[in-house]
Image 1 (cartoon, rainbow, N blue to C red):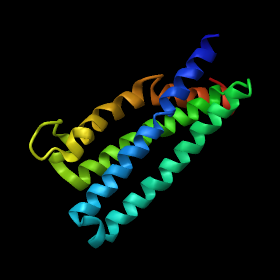
Image 2 (image 1 turned 90 degrees about the horizontal axis):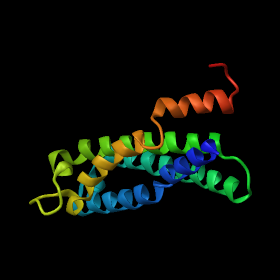
Image 3 (image 1 turned 45 degrees about the horizontal axis):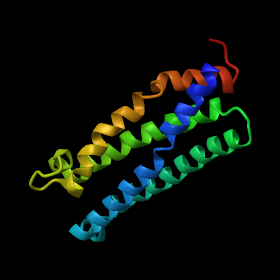
Length: 152
């Protein structure tokens, strides 16, 4: 019972991918509006990598949901989705800081706040996605022990 509850919590945590995708879309529009995206191929490469990773995270999350909807256990799949999504949220935050600097850390209402403060909110939420529902190491242990059947 406890494992099922943890699996459900991890599916919810991994399911935060929809908000990450929305934030990413807003970020791309912001970069285009600033004219950065048109002139910097390195920026486009980083954004393309993140777009691909967001789709992978979405697929992992949907697989967990599909298994639960079919009445199956999704403990391992949920751990994979949660681990990947949490680490992706951190990578997205790092890219935002690299691209936008200090403006990314400004809260809503502050002059120059990126995306009306949404970037700052994302930076705080990314940490929660990594820790909430079990730390990354707990997820790795679940994947190793239950998914790969490795010893403790």
